[in-house]
Image 1 (cartoon, rainbow, N blue to C red):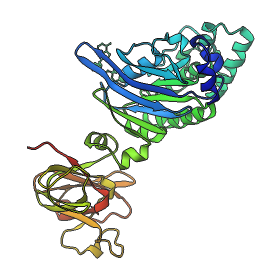
Image 2: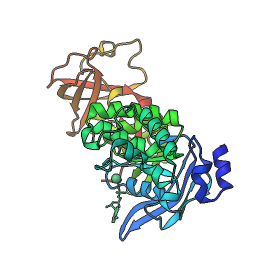
Image 3: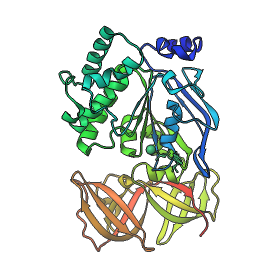
Image 4: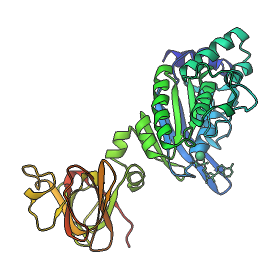
Length: 393
Ligand SMILES: Nc1ncnc2c1ncn2[C@@H]1O[C@H](COP(=O)(O)OP(=O)(O)O)[C@@H](O)[C@H]1O
Ligand SMILES: [Mg+2]
């Protein structure tokens, strides 16, 4: 807050002087950028709090990089504005924004040592030699690379190179750090390790981080809030849990985590609960406002809510039988098509009468022992399902 107030009173040239430690608030207001016929970013508005970790999540081509480039100042929006710490930076040059950027390809200078690479932004900012050495040592310590200063990038592993790129980004205490798929080139184990390190580093620095990824799991694990983009538009913005539990539309529901969609038609509405007619039966689901009897819908249900039992078994014989297991549940019967053991979980795919598949994700240790080919009933809590409108066939 203090940094933000100081900033608004100062000129763009003194951004770094004002922002000593801690993050700044970033505000994106109705920003649009097109390339000829392609609208890369289509009227996006986002408020990012000081010190917040926000991910821009979306499929390839959804406008994530373009939005980040406009934040960095390498691209200009055709309309809309961007403020950092309350100061309008929409037309401010990249080197005057004091926003650091980390790319997927680490973009290290191969002929320079690790220390020289990290010192580069300080050199650009005319920081004197003693101060440079002090800051480089601190940055190396931050990314746990003490003792590696004299090496060349080629003498480091991929993960270490990415840490050097991070050190180079944080060395001048930027209030805002932008990252474009920074862990995309690392293998899964290392990526997960770096996710934790990055998050810890961000907490220590207190910097605002805007993080681009197409990996929904990464966005969910790392972020305070996630902004989901599709075709240049902001689809939903909120904490990971909210997006996962209450996706605003079918796109977000599908993009974050696993989701079953079952096509049906609203057959009846009674208060807040609807009956949806499906190819092989009917299920109950909470109805969202705007839906009416006769509307084509998709019933969305996450695999982890589904339990399976042999179709002829009573409720009490269900996999994780508890008293009253059937009350408040709804379900559909089909043929068990596949059982896939996946370590901690076992995935069971049920084929419905219309040929569509519903998958259940079950605890491998407590899942019922069911054989493919049998008739099974898949049930889930009524309250766990969501209905999304679907175009009329
Ligand atoms: N310099 C450019 N010239 C023309 N089209 C571009 C340019 N940069 C991006 N685009 C287009 O804008 C859209 C969004 O691209 P981008 O922001 O790179 O998406 P993402 O990072 O989410 O994959 C894409 O359709 C892409 O082809
Ligand atoms: Mg991109």
